[in-house]
Image 1 (cartoon, rainbow over the protein chains, first blue to last red):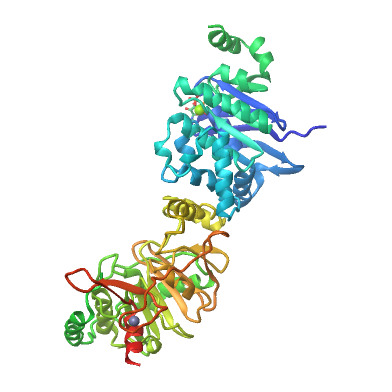
Image 2 (cartoon, rainbow over the protein chains, first blue to last red):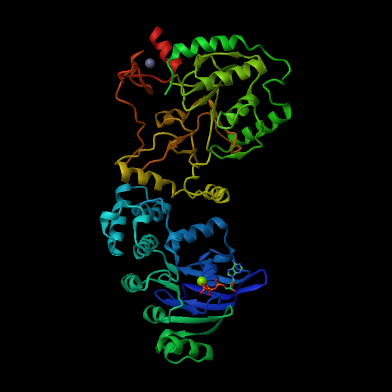
Length: 256
Length: 296
Ligand SMILES: Nc1ncnc2c1ncn2[C@@H]1O[C@H](COP(=O)(O)OP(=O)(O)OP(=O)(O)O)[C@@H](O)[C@H]1O
Ligand SMILES: [Mg+2]
Ligand SMILES: [Zn+2]
């Protein structure tokens, strides 16, 4: 039997009296990509922030199981939690500026993740950073340049490199192409897809864009007013949506 | 750049004589309750080497940035039997050193000295003396910015967390950037250290040349930051290690010169311009050490 790498039970989070997300249950298996869709304000970011440790949920259970080691995410000490986040999780922000240090060179940004998990050999850090620049298609001659000299698409690719370099076990992405010009979205998306395939990544990705979900996600959940109203294999949900809301969503976007 | 010694010495001599002990003040200016509070912070700091202990900094009759933190620590440690030495950039005769020394003469009537070995308490800005510190000496650093993580993380609540969880990986980012830009670690002052294998600490803006002197020192080292209201400490015989990379080990750089006055080859030198033609001279920044060596 395969054990889910992440199992969520009845997770809820509200902001004072505004519902963020409510009674969410789901599981994710190693190597799977889960897409989260839903209209603005439906709770996608709230959910992904709770799962990645950016937000403290009000109720529920989050269990990670990595290499047969179970981590009860909401019941470990803060230092254990931060260490777990540092070594096992990664978070790609919609705005790459939120995930990068703008006053630190590209190589320093990529290398920080390595240094934070204990790398202390400059030459090794440098060569791994170069390798990852290459992987995300940024010319290695730019390694000492500051991120402010990079285009939006390059910044996002840099943020992706920074996050993946330590081989995290679960990667969260909140609208990774959302802030980019349409012209560069495709390239970043393509890159994410090839990395997912090459490295067999386990990913939870939030997107407004059903085309992104169709391209990347094995499974998907549809959110509305903080709850999951439909879930399943992406192909199935997109081909044959059961809920009226999903049908509306699919027909309005995909059949244009 | 330091002014030439003679000029200041003559002037200061007059100033020194002109300030008699003033009985109106409590001993060493601060009231006894404040001293007690500061001593508690110091004792706590000594118990947790390198950890920044908050304290309620008092207004001092000098502006922030002029050593108010160091002065409060000194005032709280001073006893009537102490012999005090004050240095600024290694010299006893610069304006800042003179005014702090006068402050303590006026408020505590204690003995002062310029000779490192004779001092029981030394307050410093930017240097550690060349003469090794010894047992029972208290060495007080003036600190402008106590938080070594401040350049990375502006939020104090977050830096406190980073310290408590030993999340120090990002500290190396700064060193990484240095090597990438300059081929070596360029940081020359306030070079971060790890104290007692635990807390990362800012040694105040001393040159990295002085960093090794902090390690395993027999003296008590105290750090006071007035504006930021923090005290931290290194107890005697404590390990203090400068951060580095395996392939770029720490190097306490020193200029390739000997002192033009005393000939010393292994002391920290100031570069000074000696004439209108722009000719340079290198002399020990530690004036006490240089004088002693020259007179030998
Ligand atoms: N910090 C906050 N304080 C108060 N309410 C919040 C906060 N963050 C989110 N909310 C509310 O919680 C609900 C869910 O918001 P969330 O940001 O999770 O939605 P989302 O699906 O990510 O939306 P979008 O597609 O616009 O990013 C919304 O009603 C939102 O207004
Ligand atoms: Mg959102
Ligand atoms: Zn000399």
